[in-house]
Image 1 (cartoon, rainbow, N blue to C red):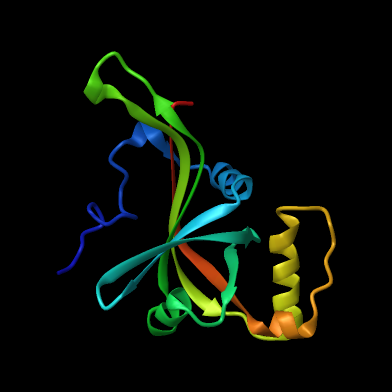
Image 2: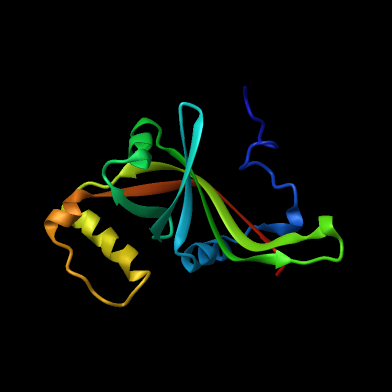
Length: 164
């Protein structure tokens, strides 16, 4: 079944008043969070997992053990969807059905590829760690080579906010 642009998740946004169109604002959301929710699909079965990540302005990066569900799924199907949110909260109401979610969110589609090479992986791992601490760590070759590092080339991205 084909999906039209109007009904596809990255087609036209229904609530234009909540849409973020400024890429700099979307980038700020991506850089403000630490956890990305990564959605994968395997034989028409969805799988979602939170991961720590880094962002270079065009691609997202995360690390993982080289074995496990997400890495095995990515080998079979590298199309991913990601979600990054900040400022989550509730906008209360006097009516039960009028409560709303306060948030700033970015959702995107992309293609994942495995990063190869000790130095390329080491640089990305250092950048992911740097998002959490100023402390510098030695990353031995054995640990770096044992890690799986994935690059997500962003193909489309949308932003939405409410309550701001």
